[in-house]
Length: 230
Image (tube, rainbow, N blue to C red; front, side, top):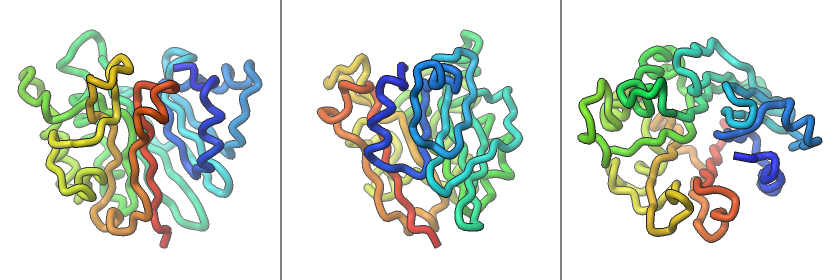
């Protein structure tokens, strides 16, 4: 939370698009005179201090598509640049209605079923905090577990960039994206970027931030993704 106090770090990377879970709304930014220099800002949330924010910069523009609020923080967005367009599904799964059977990976899997037309787009990118990993597949008998969600995406030729580049199976990750309670001894991999297999081959860069560099800012490590634009 309190992204306004950390927002300056974004500017150092000069991103085209930034997806920020636990982000304040526009009013909070304006009240605190925070300006990231973004060209567009899409935000969804129920708490003005803790929503999902998507920023575009420079010549990139973003437009909200048909967002079914039943799936809350899984937001479909059209990204445009140089007469080309992309589909971005910005994701932050959460605990819903105090029911684990409607939360986290279940929420994501249901949303992807709903948003199947977006998954068919050849340039779809899904990125964010999923709060999920296959190591928890058997913890409860839910409608969907993490591996089920992965299978849904694979039906559309959509794969996790980290796992494909590192030749890892789900649950075998060696790099953490979350350090629970900022404890280096509690590492988890729960943040992902998914895209079509064809576009994984067009990557210029993919990396995960390191503990020592970012733990003072957040318990989550940033994902950096750079594609070769056709």
